[in-house]
Image (tube, rainbow, N blue to C red; front, side, top):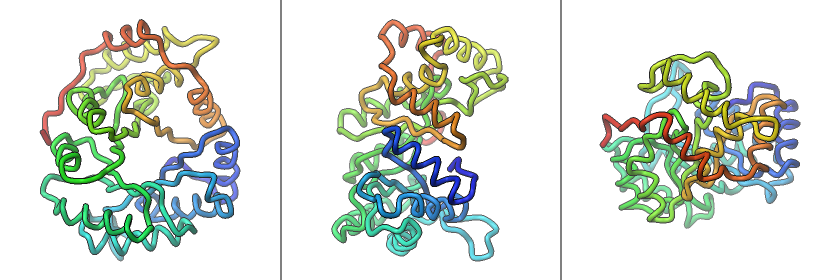
Length: 278
């Protein structure tokens, strides 16, 4: 989602990531109206077996380009996957994710679509991208999802209330996005964030900074916080520049946080609770 350059520039950045040992790349048909999938497809043409490609479905662009509408129907998913496969220049998607979801969705119909795509060999696994506990519980109960992508950081610990343990119990992996909290944990000026006051944001950023140093960057501390939980299999980090890629590589190569360091971070703020979608 973070890529902004032309296809050649993006390919160089993505190849550098792969050369450094990063092999999971996450996109969506929504990003740049499909152009993000195109740029990923161009970058990894001829090296498909070396990468794990994930994309998402459910947000349908309007024909006039004015925006998109939510469409988790079986018919739309079966149609949209072919367009994603074409843009990605591949005949299969490693992980196909529902890009959102509400409790009012035709969930069984959505699951049927993903299961059919698995049987057809067009996808290997499927999951959802959601932060809503009530939606997550239904998919855990009714489907064979392999993963849930959710926002999780030191400043957004809502998944800890019930979702992380539930998913761990059912051996469903979490892909954590937003680990840096829009850069607020990496030195950006403090501002209110998801129910946290400016002072609380500054306090959290200060705790991250205190654990960082010459041998460990603030990015490593922030990302390793979310990776500490057993069910979090990947911190999905946005990369737009070579410097951001360098930070991501350092995270991948870093050692886990010590238990004592985790305790320090967890004591900084009390976790917020979901007020809706329970």
